[in-house]
Length: 319
Image 1 (cartoon, rainbow, N blue to C red):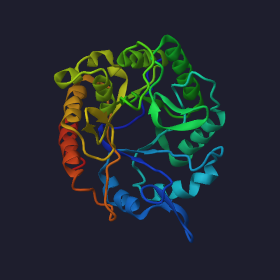
Image 2: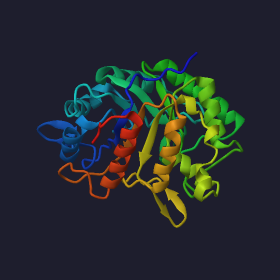
Image 3: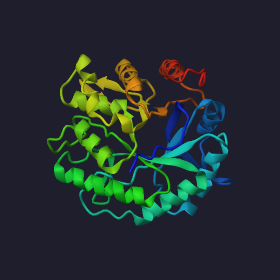
């Protein structure tokens, strides 16, 4: 079986979280019901025409079994704020691909399939890890068990989700953070991820922050952070993510605040020529003001990405 890559021209897009918090994702209006918050709507209408694609992170609004009818009003409003032809995808947060325990997915996969069909989503992405334990969500997804048993369980979980989705499932390399992530097992995470991709023939997402966080967790610094890229499933790479990060007291923090480190840009520069099937580079969770204008602290990161992607694609898109 060959890797099934989503059809997409090469380009730079944006990924956004959509929490039900009334401030940065979805809110509720007594007259209009569920809807995007105003700054997000303004940001999408002014900026999305310049993107090559977009993904949106699905957040459950409650612990009830998900039903499209409970999400349709908000997601309809989201769709209305986007250019009709903009390719869009779903970043999942509940498939729990790294679990070794039994996990019910049938209703979740049926809901996800319906969401994909209703909103013409082209792929579903999820970090390979544990998003919940004993039915309770964790604040930050934990990496999978880096063991033979962990790999076998993750392969089975991925295959179940692939069979239940109408679009490709794109596997994202997980994040590692000392003091937050519990790392169990002796597999090198790059080797584990490559074996998973090879066994499932899945396209993958390489999040540069997550890659750096693994090497940082191992105690590597400087040029050593960029070593061993050949151990990754480079031919499977469909997407690269970049989110704002920072170093706090020698901890690598995936802060998602829109300020990209120089090390992330360096790693992007190294990966671009190594990934022959790469189509999408995605700036994840940029920050914007109450008028939907990108924060001044985020603009240098966006400009640096635009310059690189213009060189990569040979176009002037996203300017």
